Image (cartoon, rainbow, N blue to C red; front, side):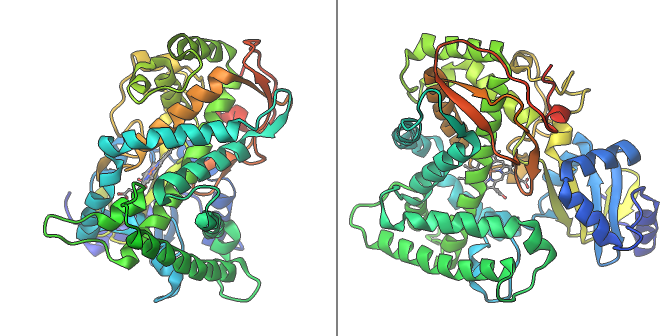
Length: 476
Ligand code: HEM
């Protein structure tokens, strides 16, 4: 990558095609349109302007979108040239908010490398194996309440499921424990971080969501410190991720500071919970709307497992389940786009761009490129029998040195949950339900996912649905 002069840089930013600022609201008008439906906006950018489009051209605020696996690779494989900025508000200096929001996602350089090395420990195979029984117990507990014939919002159910899994595995908390409420605070705090209202009105004034978010962060900091102290005082070492991180140390003996533990615990919870629940609910929806795949999956699972939950070794022998998850996360990925901030001037295709340019790329748009995935809107798990994209063409868990550290754990949790749910229940979408996407950090169904629960009677059939899901998945 060659460096460019300031003069050519300014010149090239002007050369990149892109939408004009809104006549009244200026660049904020574009930002508002983007935030209202990021996916539709990115599709419009690609259709209208091609592989590279500039979105905001202000000298202090430059944002460029890219739509090609070669740019995915350039951006994601060079973390020192393209820094991550995280998903939460920065918050006032010295605030509790800044502390609880500062985890792996917003770290860069040597600090990111050092912390990532430590955080990867509890997500290695030898630890993941030990999480299996707890996950099975939680799935049994949550689905044990489902009654045949009842209508449920399956998105709510999946959120409950993953909140309990994340609370247990990451923090060591059971639903019955007094400290369990800390996960509810984390959830609320994250919601406020990513809400459009907080983004457009970051003002610390009584009654405003931004103020509530800062207050929650203070509570969260207190609760997390109490949790860390409690774990340190326990005689028997805990096997949850936070306990492992408290004990983790580098080769030279360096352990994580309390501030690092607070930030990492919160960010791990934030990164794990909604991503997994959104992926699960989309997969259940896709199965319900593709009866032949649902039937084949029940055959595979019941044939091998005879109604029980898979053991850790059996998880790797369920090849259709594996393909269903891969394909579900291709067609409806929880992470739709991401962005980085350039640290030096750089070349992007034919253009020279300055440092501190925000460069975005889209997992969703890459996953729907017909040259990589023929008939991209078709849910076809069997495409994975022959399809082998590069890491920068399949980005469900990201790619490069900052790829998801929880991918193996999330896949295990999803496989266990789906294997148990699918063998036991036939789920159908309530006829004519409106299924629209809702996307802030992760993409989930906007109005929930109304589904009817039946015992697994193998009477598979699909129901008509409404909404912009039809733009994303071919449901004919
Ligand atoms: C189905 C569930 C999940 C999906 C779809 C998912 C997706 C992703 C993606 C796409 C990235 C890269 C983001 C980027 O490049 O900007 C990422 C990063 C990350 N994920 Fe996940 N994730 C999932 C589950 C989890 C879980 C369970 C954990 C932890 C318990 C986790 C922790 C992280 C962390 C810490 C990062 C940042 C890594 C770094 O910056 O070095 N994720 N995830």
